[in-house]
Length: 340
Image 1 (cartoon, rainbow, N blue to C red):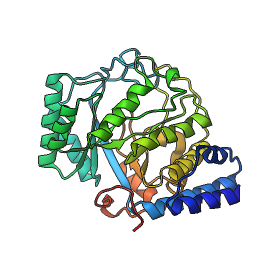
Image 2: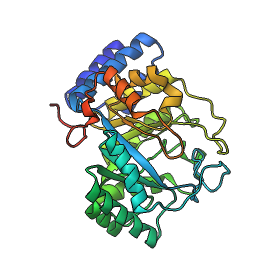
Image 3: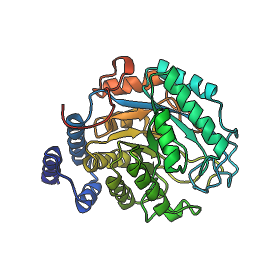
Image 4: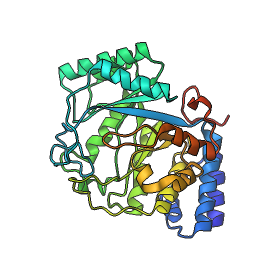
């Protein structure tokens, strides 16, 4: 296995790719010394293709618990009684206040998230006004996660300052029917294709720990490849009371870290970010291992319905892992690319 890891590291560093079967062989690693070799290989790839400064972003849950979809992991689905606070779309000035707090903490990317499959006309116009206000009043790089949009809506949002759109695949095609019945995997992929065709940067990843297999996680990594995501968030299930997945047992954190290292070899030039559930499932020790094994960013400051670490603690972990976090300022474009 050591020879395989070395060969794959060399191939990826030279611009090549690993295969699905090779990734599955890496996923079968069980012992700590060999896993550490894999993490070292993934870190070497991160260091070559990604900035030394971490990619940090924060988000605002701008419309909560009003979703008609039945995703089994989500406490914002109206199908489940979860006790999550319900509120309509936030006013532009309210979102601006959240954005300013993030910017003051040193974060440079900010995502406006709304629950639900789509926005009605008045909601879309309000979101458009929000992006215009954020563009005028902050220096943040602006992202959206707003459900399904038309090409005209995408054009208007780009004109208002949105540069990237989040639309997670969540898991493999094979496992998807186990967690969602109100829309299909093909619909998720069609949206990613739509974003590519309309010149919008893609942010797409998934959730570990929903009951999927190792193979499912590797399949997810390869499902994402055709869409060339610029950002790949890795969430780890935080089982929410009232959802169908509330009793799911946690995945071994060493398994999560190993899988992320494999994701780095599959996606060498992508920003791979630890996102929701990382504090609960990984703790400081395994988060820092992940930062030395393929991860080069965090979603910070909290998530849609759960809180996160204080930003200063996240910056401390990044610093301990060797990232440059002075003023928490990411590289100019905050995107992995050719070696510097």
